[in-house]
Length: 132
Image (tube, rainbow, N blue to C red; front, top):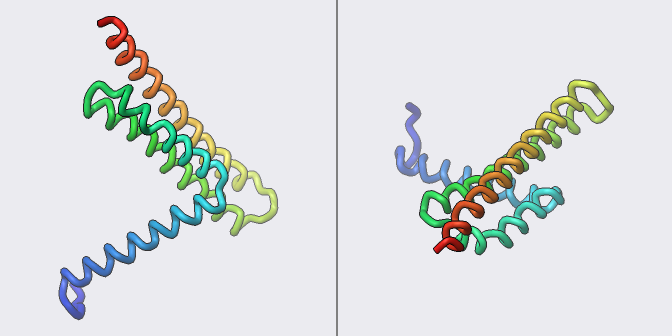
């Protein structure tokens, strides 16, 4: 282990601060430059109150919000892959196109998961409320 000024705690703190700063930069740049990410964030904000109504338990709430965050995570990764592909391969190339299409497919699958989880829990929990 390297000796650092201030010791391990100082190193850990500096790394945590740096990593958090880079992460916030990534979120800001994706929000600024990627329309799909903005739409997904706004959809998440709009649906969040509904999630509290749909959820019958803490587990349900975790599933609803977890599915929502998976969409955002997939979109962040998709945007990163597209940026790197565009940087290294500005001309059309089969492998570049395949990489971008596969990253886009990951976003689509995350949206299918999101829709399925929200629909299933809404059906299950709202049907139970209506049956009472």
